[in-house]
Image 1 (tube, one colour):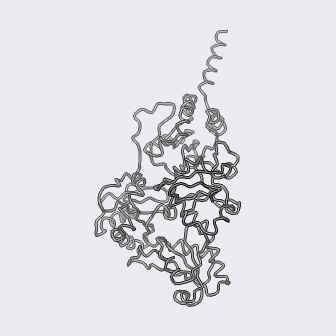
Image 2 (cartoon, helix red, strand yellow; image 1 turned 90 degrees about the vertical axis):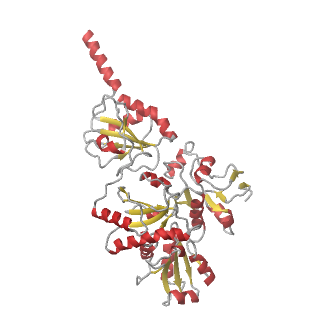
Image 3 (cartoon, one colour; image 1 turned 180 degrees about the vertical axis):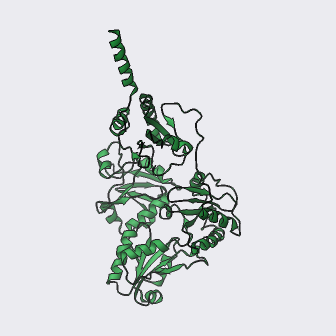
Length: 495
């Protein structure tokens, strides 16, 4: 270990050839892990530590300068292009010398450590005793356990296949311990999902059995996805990607299952009571509760205050990105939530739109777009529009600004092309645009506003002009060309 890393003070996290592991979790598999794993793609050591947002003192010094931990993509573009790295920082995981995926989880120490522990350990944990079993299902996250009297059968093989395929998102264990098999699967083989005990409630069972006639990896996946969270899960940084992305109502309040489980469940039970009523009536909507502190950034996207009152604040975001906010205060009897949901399903709610004020003067070479004038400028059917989505704090955006302005000036006389920009941190970005990094640039051609093209070219003025000459619906009119034509005409007149 000392040959690879020099650790000072309290080091809770190890960064080893692209893998982050808790120091206390390193076991006899360490040597195999160290030499079989490869490189994480990111910017620099400083950047890496900064994005981890450590709440604990960590000092990490790389003693061996030839150890391929980090790749500076500005100096090693071939490596980064080979592995499809287009944004920074990007973390990639390699297993046995082959890329096994990109880390897309939370950019926190706990999130990265949790993910890498799953990658480093077995896909499914073998449980050899009742004590092992109780400890495993007592975790804060749900558990999927396979019970197999015959560990050499097809059912066991399919379960292990499912565990390996789904290890990034779910916890798996298996056992052939007769006492456990007899208790949970008298027939000798089966799969049971155990939800966390802290989320136990009277509206649903905490234990769900796999009921298909045959055990296959595909059916296990479907079973887990349909049952893992129940009616109303606790959304966290670790599981949000599995919960979001569908029509979802979230109640935000002071959720804290470590310090105040009773208080956390008090409001959750009221959400579940109303949610179950609508779900039983056949309505389609997912539900979750979340910490207003952890997800304060989401509250700001809904225009909500994350520090007012004890009661939850409630909002809905649909799979299409439409947002609805519950204006009435959450009542302890759940009636306010019930009215909000009824209005939602009846189509009586007004969508919430996060937008800066429309500029009073918008005559500059680069048009300023906000959510409220997006349709007017970007979706104008007779205009080709190149739009930059930026963030005020983004260094790359600041570097681009003078070049983008120059581009706008060169095309300022063109009646058919608009150069525009929008602060994506202060305005809702409409579908089908996707902004996952800054700057993100799209070209919305005239007559094809529902099929914008993401710009992937260079960021020099000449690059943009070449692109527009190729993609624009009419030949771009450049100011300098316009001047050249006028001077040529004047020269002829003088003759």
